[in-house]
Length: 98
Image (tube, rainbow, N blue to C red):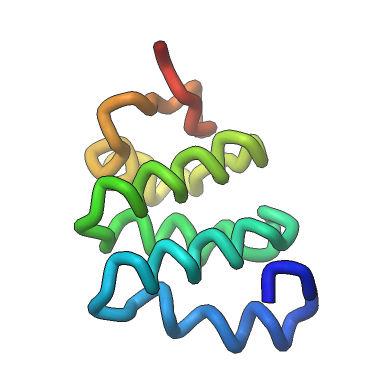
């Protein structure tokens, strides 16, 4: 589905970002990141805030950083707390440090 950046593909994969299996969530996030970040950013911010797996959190943070997505102001504090250790917010945009 990552090679089909259409709304139907996003809709099909989105429920899997809440799956109980970390590898399934990672696949869903990776597929969502194949789409333009602006179209999936809200779902990815929500996913990072809820995510337990550091591997999945890293993938989300990296994708948002690469897309230079600004985290909404009302989510900044929670997002900052949820970011993996190698990421920081540069204003409202996540970035990898070190």
